[in-house]
Length: 312
Image (cartoon, rainbow, N blue to C red):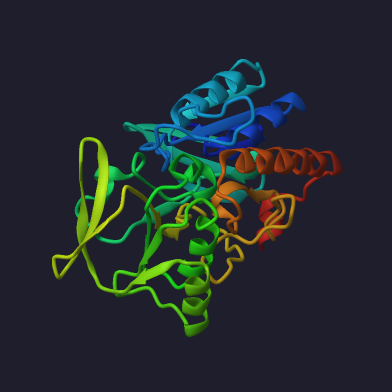
């Protein structure tokens, strides 16, 4: 491994949260390394919504524009790599990884983790074929385009009722599919019934449709429930095996931070989807990145303790 280059801050992940953090840090004249594996979970999404001045832009185009803006600053270095180790030493934090066999290593006084998360879906053979066009996961992002249509909400978790009640604001024809796995309490069912939301507990065989999009949800007994679009509740997984530092996590595995993105370890920050979820919108992630950047800059001004001492 070559000697690590020194930076004020290493930002891991170039989604909206990481890009925003990096942009605001270089504008604070911090030397920043932005490391990205280029594996965005919204790669299948054709349009993103709710981002002021960029409503309807492709998420990939938004990432491209953001990266270009960051790279335009002389204080910024942007590189592609899969990070496999982040640990503290006497000089701060050492970040290492590789891209196509080429090693990457850097040292920073602070590290911002903005790697996002991995999501898994109910095991339906055709789900990926419709994901990003007829089927989405973010209600706030995509429900407007599906308003007034017969919709499905598919999931295997126990929070489907809350999501369904939010989604019902966009349609009066909504069916919740638990796939025989998701559990709804009697109170949940009563609230859904009062809101005019139907519940289907039979297991799903697959989705049906064609080039023009989704046409229905086929159950294991052969019954097809006509639907023209839908939303799926993924299970989320935060993969931070590259960190050798123990962080606090909530019951769902998300990294616990304060409202500025500080973890319990000085010099180590987390922002975006690795932290407890709120609205899943890109503009929310970008805003959180700016907040965390301000906290990082102020902490550096005040003088961070050496990272090695902080984790002992």
